[in-house]
Length: 232
Image (cartoon, rainbow, N blue to C red):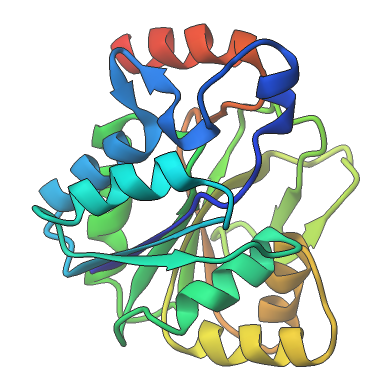
């Protein structure tokens, strides 16, 4: 399995709230978030780990360069206008085959993630398995509409009465998604949620894989919440 991490955001909200370290280097239980992801991916037999950081993240780039001495890491250094554009830059260096993409501040329990990855590796039916969660703490959640078999029908900005899940920000996909991503870039589409809608519109078979709880570290108070969650 190949993995990719978007770590190119500025983490401006954390900085405004007094967190001095760049977001990828914010520690959870003594380990930088980016290092935690790389360690988890490595334990799940990562063939490659592609990571993008922005041009200003010298400290983060140097940390990842040290990690690259022991892990199969590709580093992309480029500032982009959105996470979808960061994904596009990563797609240029990623190895062919199935892959899993996540942002650096997406926090999950390793055992949940392992089950998710193994399910996708074994699957021969779907073009993608999108991690979804009933736990809603995002300020602007993306709701996931499914049928009774958890086939994804749509991604919606607004909640409705029967809504059960929101996007967890973890995307396991095959190579078909990369072609659709290139089309989105060419058409001027922005934002990952619109890319996900393009996947559905293109007819890809997507499965909503439920994970009980996934946390984003967007604010200073989220750090302690994430540490407590990991230690549960």
